[in-house]
Amino acid sequence: MIHGRLRPCSRAELERLNDASWRIAETVGMKVHSEVILGFCEEAGAIVDHAAQVARFPRALTEQLLPEPFARAVESIGVDGGGVNYIESVDEPEAADAGDDFPGVAVPAQFGVGFGEVTFFLHDWETNTRKEVDREGLAELVRLGDAIPEVTRIATPVTPTDVPAVTEALESVLVMMRNTSKGCGGGIRMPEQVDYFLEISRIYESFTGRANAFLPQSGCLTTPLTMGDRTAGIIDRLIHHGYRSFRFSSMPIAGGNAPVTVAGCSTMCVAELLLGWLVARCINPDAGGPASVISGSMDMRTGKACFGSPEAVLQDSISHQFFEQVYGVTLGVDGDASYIEANMPGIEAAYERMLKQQGLTVLTGRLALHLGSLDGAAIFSREQAMIDLEVSRALHTLYAGPDMSAELMAVDDIERIGHDPGAAYFGSQHTLDHFRDLWVPDILSRETFDVDRPGATGDEAILKRANRKWRAR
Image 1 (cartoon, helix red, strand yellow):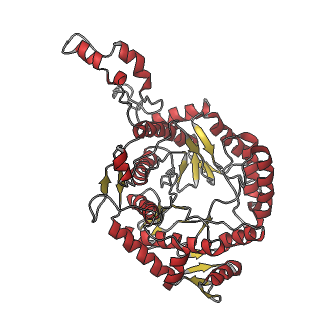
Image 2: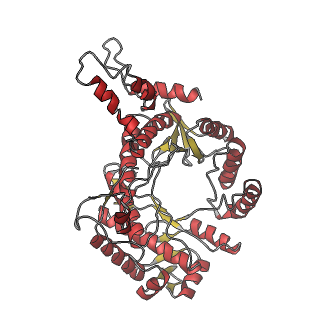
Image 3: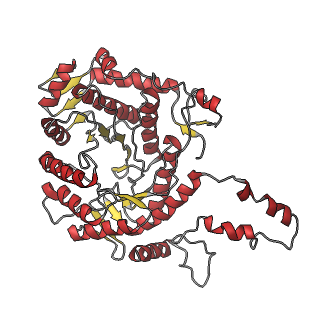
């Protein structure tokens, strides 16, 4: 484990965020497109305007429904004030007992990465086009993910278009179940699908023991502060079947449907998620905290929502830190860094994904790894997946940290070779024993510039190698 973490907010700033969120819950509230859910809110004590479909939460009710702020968190460590502070983490038990709540970046011992993100198009690098896929095309992509040993979980890489929209999610799950055992990412996207997914989940559980495999992990709120028709309709149907535990996610865009500043958009993130939690607790007082946030910022030149910007990374990280420290809840972020702006594979995509992966990792303490999605998770690229696989392995190596054992410190070799100008470590037994442990890329080039082959090390050459690599799987 790499020790220490960055934190975007001080204790005073977190308190300010909490106060602002409680104020918004009381004065603005949540618009909910469901009389059933509004009924639960009213019964719990919320002030409900049925004509406007809005539930507002007085401060006393918020205090009753939510855990006491900071009760499960310890005092912040570091300088209180603006800026991003570095939090040191130490190993001594007495220091840990003193309450260091920033243990560092946790890295799985075994390298594994996700594949796919329920995109809508496949990028065909050889023709430089994006295209739709049918069920057989989806099956081919799923089999590609299944053939990559490092892939541990597969979402629907591209949704098939040879079936009606209302059954597309159901067909995708069936294709996944037939072609991989690495998870069946996908699930309910429309209220009309609920009954069928419940039945599929029961059948799946009878074979695998995994309960509720295809039920939604969270409902998506619509910024600003709205539970829209689709999410509310799904929850209504699940309530009808006896389900009572729900979590909600948010996707505000700074300058679009949320304030343009990092502070303003972060306030929207936190308030929206906290309101979703309040609604969930009206239905079930024991409902867990919010599920996740993927925020963005608006590019005012193009009108495009940008999820890989430094502002987006900060907004996600502030939300993560807020719920971790204020309420003791782990909030999911775009931890796989699957949402970036680049719409073609190559250097732009690699730059954006690396920026987001690095930022989210050091700010949230969760290693962010992902393969293949582009253009705000609207396009999937096999070439980018191969590039991302290589970069993800490098990040795993980096954040796993060094093995500082006596054997690997090589003091005997250093003493033996000393100052001898005729000796070299290149051919030592220690090097022969351990050189295979080094990260060595297959796609990225480490060649020097060759005047006779000026294109051998450029972006085009990297993409050609990436194309050959996925075809060889």
